[in-house]
Length: 242
Image (cartoon, rainbow, N blue to C red; front, side):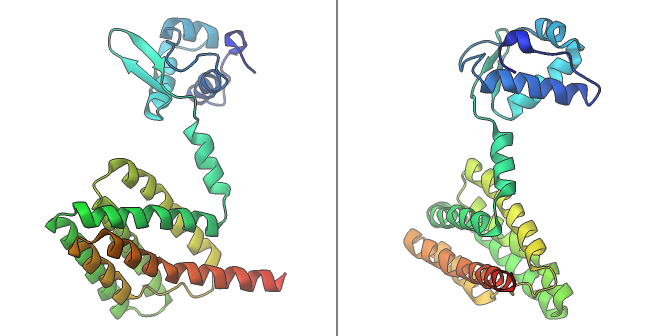
């Protein structure tokens, strides 16, 4: 389907979801070029045969996704033809090694920038997350305790990236951080989850606090080598059984 005349009446699946899909397609296929103004809510409602509230909600979703931009008193315009939903679906289909490599790249850059931009509060947050992680694991060294430390470990790594004070980097990292956590939990299954080594985490905080970006990046990559090696061993074991 392409072209404005191909906008179809929204079905019962979900009026808003159907409207979102059809409006998105008009943007992606170039029917409404970047910078152009899309039809009014009234016009779109007539073409889709839905209420204006449904159209308004669909537009709101696409504005939030960054594909459209609304200007008060002027209308709604196309900002980008890139479909972030398609990108996220691609990430979800990627293997754990692929996602882990992307996360490592994001986190290494985050550590480098954190060395240059961190505040005393950022350092306190990192050390507090490490303390909570160590405390939980000390009380529960069994598998259940190891799984319980995953949340604190993610809290620590997120604090590192947030110390870069780059909102765009933080948002992208949050997505990949959650994806890696879910992928590793699913991939390891009954296998032992890799244990976080506190010393390498503390070395990263010290490197960031030193203000040396090269040292911070190197410390971050050294830390991430641990889960990467665990994943490689698991994948090799799985491949050997096939």
